Image 1 (spheres, rainbow, N blue to C red):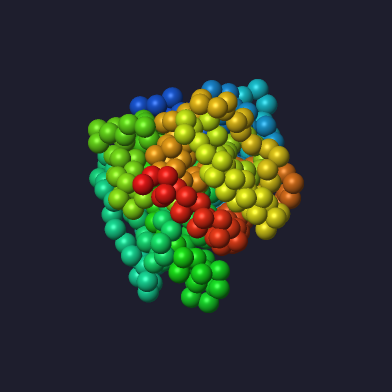
Image 2 (cartoon, one colour; image 1 turned 90 degrees about the horizontal axis):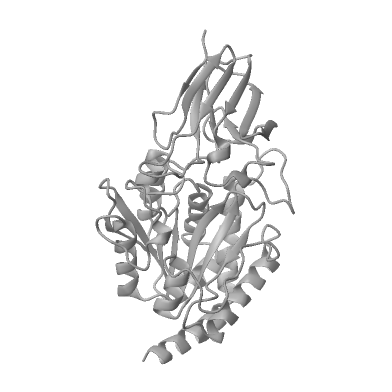
Amino acid sequence: MALTISSAFDAGNIRVVKQSGDVIDLEIVNDHQSDFYQWFYFRVAGAAGREVTLRITNCAGSAYPHGWPDYRGVMSLDREEWVRIVDSSYADGVLTMKLTASQDVFWIAYFAPYSMERHHDLVASIAGLPGVGYRSLGHSLDGQDIDCLTVGEGPLSVWLYARQHPGESMAEWWMEGALEKLTDEDDPVARVLRRECTFHVVPNMNPDGSRRGHLRTNAAGVNLNREWHAPSAEKSPEVLCVRDAMDQTGVDFAMDIHGDEAIPANFLAGFEGVPSITERQLKLFGVFGETLERLSPDFQREQGYEIPPPGQANMSMSTTQLAERFGCVSMTLEMPFKDNSNLPDEIYGWSPQRSKYLAYACLDALHAILPELKASAKGQRKAAA
């Protein structure tokens, strides 16, 4: 039986370039109307008991070529458990993955996928719980809903949103964890958070890119996290509808959830460099990071992005735009595609379950700083009056 490769399914991405027996050369397909590519997800059939060699040959031209060294792909027999491919190597622009499967059909991906079908299952399971509100904030270019779940009834307005970059699927695994904790009736931290805060949760801001198998862009090839200064209905309705909803509720605290291809660690990126930054904002951002580091061994503050000089922040990004627009504390959480090198896992690397555990820790950290957040919100509203 000949090996076959397919990716014509929700979030799939790959094309076959050449096949010679059990050795197959592949290429990742660009995001539509964009030069970005790095996400891959495909099925291999007819492989039971055979040593299969899969070579992705166009890695050098990908969006983040520094993400490939020390990277290992993931494989699943059931699309539930995703394990790292031990025999993964990168050299001369080619990612090579070798494995022998115990069954005829298996799946390979850049990270454990979070398909739109799973997204709908998540929305259905959470929206039906007591005390949870649902609304569609608007529609994507392909006509998909931008789903928003509301949890809690407190005075503090907290926004959690993810997958502006659809290939960063760990972000929606984090969201699944956050929603599970927030809706747990027996969790004392969640009970206090629901009393003190109203959470507006957007699990997936880029459903079109997610379904199409994109790395970074929407259906028009637009990077949504470079649209927050001037979103438009023509190019970035996803951002426009979310930002409009934020204008209605105000924002006291916001987290934008992402994944990073190259850095093998979890870290925060802040809003340093925005024009009207205050000591109040900076202090609370620092307290949250310190608290999260204390609570989670999977979080650290040594590695991260370069901090921009005063007044030189990129105002097209959500974290900086929200900090400036609302005077709030906002941040980007980055998780690795590879692993947390400070606490590695040889079987799973960074994984869906660890993403969910980090979400639990983030909410525990938010609970721990509630007194400071209340004081900050009070100062923010006083300054705006």
